[in-house]
Image (cartoon, rainbow, N blue to C red):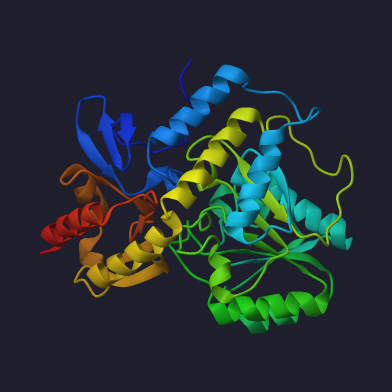
Length: 374
């Protein structure tokens, strides 16, 4: 049987990792500044993470949500403390798309409404409901078309007000920072205005923090830079450092009912052990603060660089839009300098490294960038 080839892959196979370093099957060493789509939050094979997963695997790997699992309660308490949302409830699932599906379903249950407002260039996942609020027709099959979704431009508060004052929306869903689109930020004023309009119209605000959350921007969630609270927050990617998990943080104003949501694998013992270890590492090593500090370092080093048309992002969620003559720089960084980075189209390089990134490694990347663009 062959693989169903839907991915464009480099001819590189990582087989071992430590921190921000990867080694490939042919013995080459690379520096990882992408973390597998912002997933590797505390570094490859962190000793505490490996120990937690190994010890849990020896005890019990899985049982269903038909029984008690105290690891779920521990995770909820630690996440509430770390995020500042300790009064919220947590629903655990398996991925970011699934988290967004459940968030939108909850908003519809809570309001009795069907419509959702989303934003241009948004990406919220590839499953049916999530892709319905994703502004990318290339990944939306005819089956996924959703007449209950309206798109307006990001940072256009007037357009939002025009829609929400009709009073028929269950939710507005917005990324803390648009990642797949190329690192586009909702302004702090826009988010504050959005919160106000949602309050006025009885619409729930869903903050998609799947890529921008978990300390990546220098606060636990990116929307917190605006000083607001969302009604529902979705998490995934960096939540368990590569072990599949997703989470939905839910306002106490939204009341649960048995059977409202469900999942087979969500919140299993191994996933919870991995996610607890991530939060313990983040706290012990002050990784949110490190992300903020290195975000300042990168901005000072690369904003205004001759190859950079625009520097976007916060903390360690960085978009470097290239000038036309430097398109192709990402491949040169990989094959000549051995740095993994991400992309958004041909023009934008995305940096989404582990929050354990050191300034020494960050400087090595800047040096390589400068050498290639000299």
